[in-house]
Each structure stands twice: as structure tokens, then as C-alpha cells.
Length: 451
Image 1 (cartoon, one colour):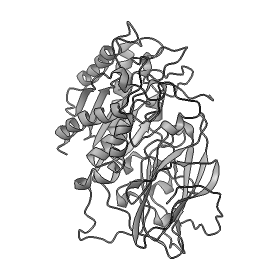
Image 2: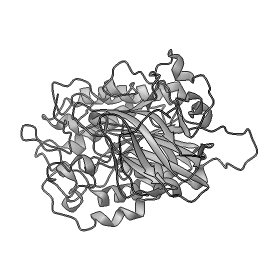
Image 3: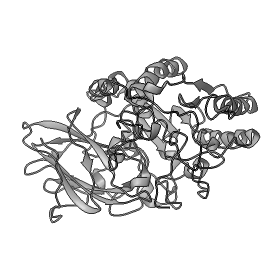
Image 4: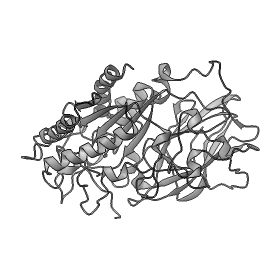
């Protein structure tokens, strides 16, 4: 079951949009509401064994830069607890939320064979759905003894490649799937026991490292796609800079060796991914390094989070997300620290921009609990005189005060981190910090939602 990658012939690849899981399965592949492909596509019958359907990374508040002061992230020492949390979280995506899923044995309509997609996918291309944001998932259930996947990958403004976790029957494969540019077939597993299996790809990296087009799975001779696994009934959306989307979390930093940064990203083990798995929820992660509310870490970049939020693909202004296809129950926002990179922003303006983002969310998720958070590495003590934590708290309190009738707006302050928890790449939080943050945050969300 060794993970590998080879260039493969596509002679057997049959494009079968009818085998995709759309809103009927609880997941959407919507982009522009006016685009016919956003509402589904013509059904087809699967044949054979294949089914388918700037130049520099921008740092944020957790990425010190010689020209731009950081917020609350000081030199740190290595933490021996880094590896302790990795194994414990390996099966979290399949084990944690059993009580929140639909029982597949319940009487009801027969679910057709389908591939299930979680996250924001752009469906405008006839070639297949495209994805950029971290944490996006491709999930399928199949009959057979092997599985491979064909992907078409492009690089982003920060280069590439895109990286994916591969899970077979809920067990994490030891090697990451590291994409090549262009259309390539990647073997995922072989020699499986005859019978029913599940395969899942989970995007580890951010959109600035590239966009992936899903072209299809191949299950080998005699293999067949089956109905997808049960869909969780709970939905959570996470809007963030790099603080909680898994950026650099597995790195042995804070200054990681050259060439190791991208491999250290893990959306699955960052706070966003842990919240989803611990709560048994499907997650949409809108995570992008260096993005702020009033300004970005890279000041010439004016595409702040408020600009990106309506998009399916963050760096494609034409990829409008169809919000009618997926509505979250909970929204977690971890943003605002980047706004302090170039000095203390105007707090009134920060408050206004934060409120504009919240109102955008509220338009599409009128009943969601919205948690506006202050991340653990944002502190009043650094940079000296910026009072980052206090000022961001004031901005959030201003948002709440401006919406007195909205009883589902919450301020959540994470406990400040310590240097031993800040040893991810480029001074980001490490595995131990994110596990600690999730353990503290999950009960708060449960108390608000009744989950």
C-alpha cells in the first residue's frame, strides 16, 4: 500500500459527472449560481473501472519578516511534544463524529454511486471540479483491491506543489501525495483485501501553492464505485489567515530548513481541521496566509479576506461561490493579526471591516453561530506598544455592540501561547499548541450549539 506517483495513460479514463456527489449528498460543488454546472450536470453511466466526474509567499501575523514587524511571535525553543499529537490525530477524520452522521442503514432512497466533495470547489470546467483552499476533501467508497487518482495540478503565485493526505479505510498512508504540474495519475493503494473500501484525499496546503482539478478515480479490473460514506449533518466554516489552517505546523522550526516548509503544512492537524474532526463536522476552510481585514501582510496586495470570501478559488476573481449550496451551522473567524504587521491600524476602520465580513457571512448563514476569535499568538507584549490583543478585542466588541439583536455572535479569546508552542515553521504554532487549542475550544462550541 505504498503511496507513489507516476505519469499514467488516460486511455481508460471516462469522464462521469453523474457519479459526482452534489447537494443531494449534502455537499456542494457550486460556484456561480447562474452557471448551469453549479446545479449539477447530466448523469452518465460509468464503464469499466474508472469514475470521475508576486512570486514569494506572503507572511501573515505569524510570519516574521525583516521589513515588517510581526505580532506576538517571539523566538522559541524546540518542543519535545511535537510528535506526541500526530499519531493520536491520524484517525480523527473518521472516528470522531460518528454520532453526527447519517445512518446509512436507515430506510430511505437508495444512494447512487458518487464521489463526495467537501470544501469549496469550482465546477465551471467540463474537465472536472477544481480546488485551491486547504482542508478540501475528496471521499469515495469502492469495491475492489486497488485505487488510483488522476489530478491536473497548476502552481500558484508562491509556487508549488499542492500536497494531500491519503487515507485508505480511515488509516493515514505514510507518504503525502505530492502533485506534479499537469495531468498525472497517482497510485494510492494496491493489494487490498477484496471487498468494500474507502479512499480520501485531504488537501494539506493553501491555494497559493496551486489549484487541483480532479479528473477521476480508477479502481482497477473488476472494481466499482459505490455510494459514498454517510455525510455528517454538522457543518463548520473556518475563515482565517495562516494562524489556524495548518501552516507550518509539522515543521521543526521556528526556522525550517530550505525546501521543507510546504511539507510541514497540515490542514488536517491545524486547529481548523481538529475542530471539524472533534465535532464530527464537514468543514469548509477559507484559509490564506498573510490576509487581513484592512490590509494584508504584503501591502501592495489589496485582496483582503473580505475580497476573497465570495470566491471558490481565492486567486480567481471570476470563481464566485454559490452560497445557496452549503450553509454552515458554525463559523469560526481567526483573522486580524496581520493588520498589525505594518503598525497599529485604525481601530474604527478595523471594526468596520470586521463587521462587513460578519455581515457577509450572516447574509448566507442567518442562523449560524459566529465565533470571532483572538488567536493564541496575538499578544499585547509584542510588538511593544501595539497592544494587539486588546485592540483586536476592542474591534470585535465593537462588532457585537453594533449588532445587539444578533445573539449568535461570540467573542472567543484563546489562551496566550508560550515559546515552546511556537516552533512550527516561521514561528507558527506547533502540533501541541493546536491540539491544546482544540481541546479548549470544542466544549465552547458544543455548549453554544448543543452538539
